[in-house]
Length: 91
Image: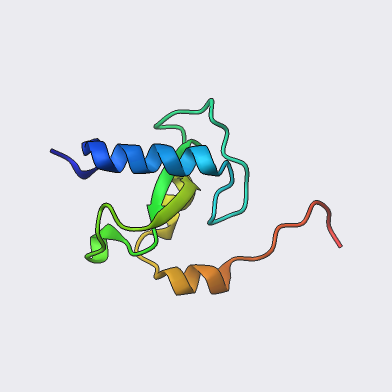
């Protein structure tokens, strides 16, 4: 079984997307009408990347599929440092 077809993982992903419609990586809106494989569809991003040994059922947050892919294996702390505040207009 693939890790994304695991029922517990799917429930956790669905809960994260139900709680938040904002990508924690870029701050943009996640359109619930978009589905995989659309790059702007919702996905679940693990704080500790599974590729680095993180738990597939470990903590994470809603993100765009494309943002999740671009993050790759960057540590959570690095993402927080790099993330720029989102403003509604240019200053």
